[in-house]
Amino acid sequence: MAKRVAKKSWAEPYKIKMVEPIKMTTRGYREKAAKEAGYNTFLLKSEDVYIDLLTDSGTNAMSDYQWAGMMLGDEAYAGSRNFYYLWDNVKKYYGMPYFVPTHQGRAAEHMISKIMIKPGDFIPGNMYFTTTRVHQELAGGTFVDVIIDEAHDAQSKHPFKGNVDPRKLEALIKKVGADKIPYVFMAGPVNMAGGQPFSMANLKEVSKLTEKYGVKLWFDATRATENAYFIKMKEKGYEKKSIEQILLEMCSYYDGLWVSAKKDLMVNIGGFLATRNKKVFEEARNMVVIYEGLHSYGGLAGRDMEAMARGLEEMVQFDNISMRVRQVEYCGAELEKYGVPLVYPFGGHAIFLDAKRFLPHLKQDLFPAQTLAAEIYIDSGVRGMERGLVSSGRDAKTGEHRYPKLELVRLTFPRRVYTQSHIDVMVESIADVYEKRKSMKGLKMVYEPKYLRFFQARFKKL
Ligand SMILES: *Cc1c(COP(=O)(O)O)cnc(C)c1O
Image (cartoon, rainbow, N blue to C red; front, top):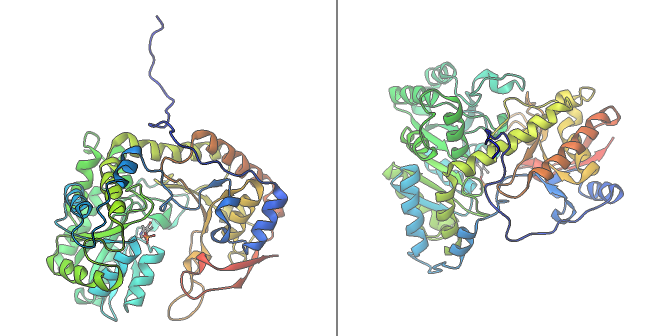
């Protein structure tokens, strides 16, 4: 018998039981579709997309275990069985005693901002996130970026580019005063930096600092299991700990957290906030009635909460999270072979193309990342999204563009949806676009909405 050797290859830890056919289109068809969508990938029709890497938000494939749970929805207006099961699992996996469900993550951000922020306050965080910052600003606060400098450098290979710089944080506290800072927040991994994690050591340091000044520390735990995975793989002392243990330890340093369940929990809709702060909990439980629905469903059906509760049990399984991050790594390693400029290290949920180096002949005003996302769609029907000048928006006070250092196209992997063969096709297309890069001339914005403009802005080709 042949000797068994250590295996280098890996495969998806599931098999396919139901399929959803996808439409194949021609280049001519896609050119027309892109033009009609104002060269904004958010405005394309899903049925015109071949491989959809727009986002990992709500695009997950649920397991048979989750689908079976959908049949057990207790659709009572008040006190649904699924709500209590979900609450138990939130306590178990995040270690937070109090819980309020919401229809999405931004609804939780909205309530937390309204409850905690007073006009004139400052909210430091490890880089902005679009919906997080807009709610902080609408509540009268000013977001302050206290992430380490390496996070703004696409080429830095720092293993924990999501870390907070404690010196920046302390300097801000000293400058504006602790009473002007309702809370510090950390997201992990940091989406806008390219899916970069923070380390447990950094979290401990930040937690000590916030304790010293009596400032609360909150967690955007939307992709917390990816952060836990990176800690396990990269940080000394965590190699033997389970994802479940690392997640609990992370959460133990926070006063509370919010989650978009459309990510880690592998469902199509849902969110929540969870906290150990009874006062915030009581206010949120009251407020949710105005914006979302009764505190025992928060804008969700009973069956949605059941799928979330079951998703929580699956998200902490090592095979599940490891396959996810390794799929992203595989894509990055393949693109690298063609010399395509990427953000390093590869993130947990997405590969980011460095549009500044991909299209160095285009000034940032010509929207290089927006241009690149449109060209990739036209080439092969692969849909990514812009994370650059358009996403960054305008300064709330001056009305000027906020020019971000990073000008990126994000290719985000829906959980359990695509196979390695899809990735191979996508890589070939991006390599082709890279060959033709000099022919691209940029875009002009012809329609700009007031809030979160990247979702609905329209462009014309130059
Ligand atoms: C998606 C996301 C949100 C917002 O959640 P929604 O469910 O889309 O409203 C907040 N923070 C992060 C890090 C996210 O990725």
